[in-house]
Image 1 (tube, rainbow, N blue to C red):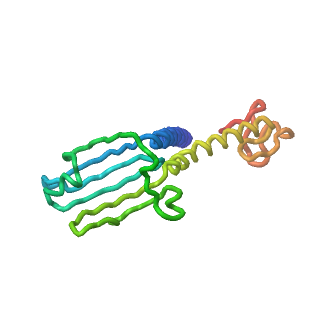
Image 2 (cartoon, rainbow, N blue to C red; image 1 turned 135 degrees about the vertical axis):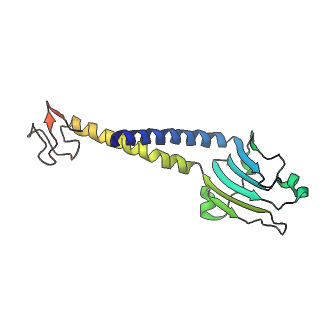
Length: 186
C-alpha cells in the first residue's frame, strides 16, 4: 500500500514538474493573468490575481475603498473570474533590486498604499523553483531504480549492496532472501 502511494505521489510530482516547465516556457512569450474580482457588499472592492510572465509566477490581492468613482480605475471589469492573455515583451519586467530580485523573487506588501486606502499585496517567484521542487521526487525515484538495477546486474543485494556471489540463498548482511538467483521479498 505504501509503495503504491509513493508511486502515485511521484507520478503526480512528475506531472506537476512538466506543467511548471510548460508554464515557464509559455511565460517567456505570453502574459497570462487570472483574476477574481468580487464585492461582498455589492460594490467592487477586492481582487485576487495569479500572473505568469517573464519566467515568473505572481500571486496577489488588491483592495480599494468603497468609492464608485475609483472602481473603474482600479477594477475595469465587473465582479467575476476572468482571464487575460497577451503577448509579452521582456522590456515590461521590473526586477526587484539585489540578489534575490536578480533570481526572480519579489514581494510587495502595501508598498504603494495611497491615502485613498488602496492596498496591494503580491508575492512573486521564478517558475524554475516549482519545476525544480517537483522534479526532486521523480529524480530520487529514478536514482533508486538505477541503483537497484546496477546492484542486481553486479550480483549485489539491492537493499544493502552486499556481494551475493558467495551466498546464494540469502544476503548475510541484511537477511533479504534470494530465490533462483534473484532477490525476493521486495
